[in-house]
Length: 96
Image 1: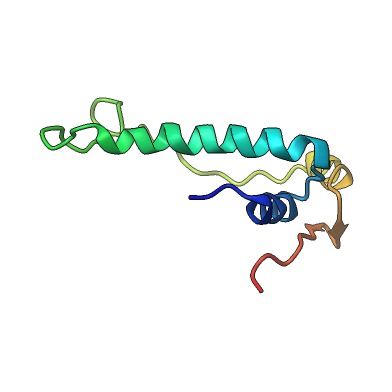
Image 2: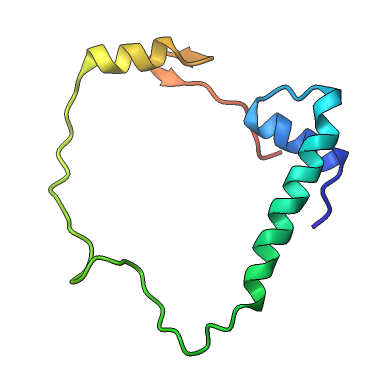
């Protein structure tokens, strides 16, 4: 994967973050380091390792899912969102 200006601009748009020109080079370098580190994981031999989905013995502990309506919390969250309409978040279209 090549970390270039096109990718940085796309990530900036998707994350709604403004990245100044002077920080783009440093960001490209840091992202390239991260990608190279993750590529190192391909070299690990895991053929004899059983796949696991949880580290909790006996499986994941489940709890009852109970919906609680707290308008005070909802209003606080919506008030601090960049854009909202009728109590819902408004997000930019990312699929063109």
